[in-house]
Length: 98
Image (tube, rainbow, N blue to C red; front, side):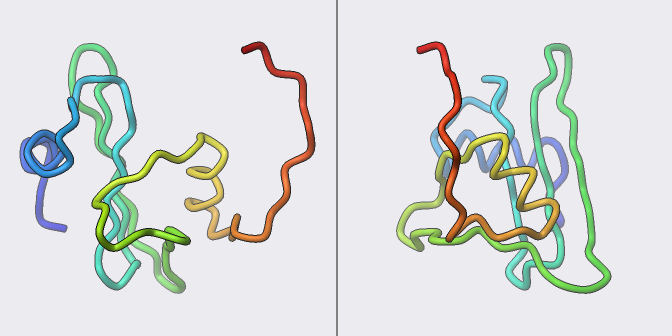
């Protein structure tokens, strides 16, 4: 978790093979799950959110170890940050424009 803006953008570009200025939020969690970094491009520069938990851990459920990245929803990100599990959660049907 020593990487800053440029190091994380390099990981996104070279390892994840994605564009770090695409507008997506890229999540990095350390091995022990106690630190999380969110990197995103806000239109005129990179923004970095960094948090260390005093107790507990962040966890990406069902993360395939062979795939370095996966797409999650905004709601799943909020649940990760709040320490909630979305593994057994069922979403109620809502209106959505396709």
